[in-house]
Length: 259
Image 1 (tube, rainbow, N blue to C red):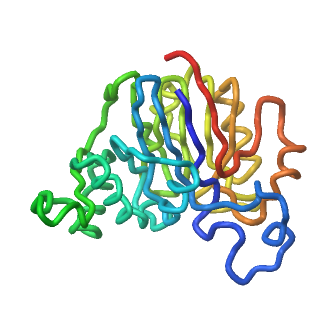
Image 2: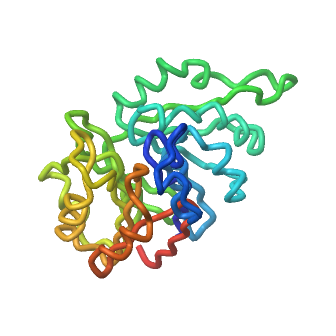
């Protein structure tokens, strides 16, 4: 299995429009961040996308994505879903309806906001000119080829959302608290990709010290942090983190073996 961090940024991305801070002016490409998303590829060729970020088109072109078998939504904040219209490219390439998985409430909201994406395919003579997606609410693990996909309920402030586990890798973004019932779903991980917004307190995201504490409790063999604001300088954070923990960046590819 390989996981690609398509975007490691927060809702504003980095650089931030109009900002002249050191990180926004940085020449380090690891400080250039698009909105948060990952691409999961299984050993049998499976291709799963977590969130359709605002920057999805750019991310897909950059990484050479040419297929998406299914989308998994964490929640419906704009930076995680507003690229959904670009799914039409994959409908056209694959000539098929693409399923979208998530919490029942998440998919209900997605269908309201992007109602034109969820419906019957257009007539064949007109081609796949709009996204054609099928909402599939789920609450328990599902098998997708070589991948076991397990939803992990977490809290984004007071808002319940999903993180996801793929075999022995977990992706949890936009989180402030992990309910006690979800901790067993995070045992025996090879890789954890975890929200780590900034150094200062935030009501709906983990700050750096909180993210480190959560990662220590989970105890994955490797932890990669993501969803950074422009307050986070890649090199500075990398130098300060404990062994086994590292900041992620756009385009980072993580190979994971075993189930």
